[in-house]
Length: 394
Image (cartoon, rainbow, N blue to C red; front, top):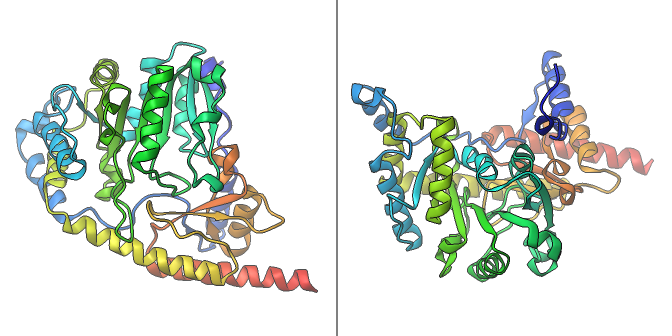
C-alpha cells in the first residue's frame, strides 16, 4: 500500500524516539516527569464547565451546528476583541468558529496554496505551519529568527525570490517555542511587507493572554490596514485551560474568512453547540479566573527559572507563554540533551530542533505541570548536572 506523495513528504516525527524511550522507562517503573507538552495542568474555570453542562442538557444543542459557528459565539468573539484590543469585528463576515485553532492553521494552506506555492514559516516555530504547507503540496520556506533579534525575523533579509512566490506568511507572537514577543512597531513592518509582496499574514495569537509582569501582548489587527492583508487565529485552549474542548476562532480579512469557511463546509460540520455555549461563557465571563491562572504560571515561572539557574542552566525569563526556551549545555545538541535528561534524570523536555533548524541548541520546557512535580524535576536535573560536572572534573 503506497501512501500519497504529500504524506511521504512529511519529515519523520522527531519526538518519536524520545516518546519510545519515555514509554520504555515508564514500563520499567521509572517515574518520568513530562514537562515537554504545553497542556495546562490547571482546570477549566467552573463557570465554563457549568455553561457546557446546561447547554448539553438542552436537546436543541444536539443537532448540527451552523458551519460558521453560532451567532452567539461569533458575537462573543467580536465583543472580546473590542474589549481586549479595541478592534471592531463584523461577526457575520470577519469571525469564524474553529475546532481548535490548530484546525484552522492546518487548513489555510489548502485554501491559498497551489502545488509549488511558497508559505513563509518562522523558524523556529510551531511545526504545523510547515507540515500543513507540505500536505497542501506547497513549499515551506524558513524565515530565520534568532535570540539576538529577540526571536523576531528580519523581514528585510527574506530573499526576494521567496517573497515573490509566497502566498502565506505564518507568524506567532507571543511565540511558541521561544516565548519571544512582538510590539506594534514590528507588526507595522509585517503589514508593510505583506502589502509589498501581496502575502496573506496568518498570525497565531494563541498565547496573547498568558503574559507576565504587567505585559499585555497586542493583536496584529490593531495595526491600521492589517485587515487588508491578515487573518488572526486564537484559541480558548491556553487562556481558559480548555485544550481538550477543541474550540478556537479565526478573525480578520473577510476574503480569507470566507475562503476558509468554504473549505470547512466540505470537510467538517462545526463544533458541538454546547461547547460553543461554553465558549460564550468564557469570552463574556469574569476575567478573574484567567488572572488567577496566569498568576500561578508567573509564580511557577519565577520558581522554575531560579531553580534551573541554580542548577547551572542559562534560562531566560519569559514575558509571555508558559514555555522556557533553554540553551543546552556545551557538548550537547538539543536531541542529545533531551535524551540525557530523560535517561538519567527521568525528566522529559522537547528538543528545539523539532521546531526548525534554528531551534537547535535549545530545549523547550512547559510550565504546565503541578508545582510539586516541577520541584522534583528541578531537584533531579540539578543532581544530574552536578554529578556530570563532577565526573568531567575527575
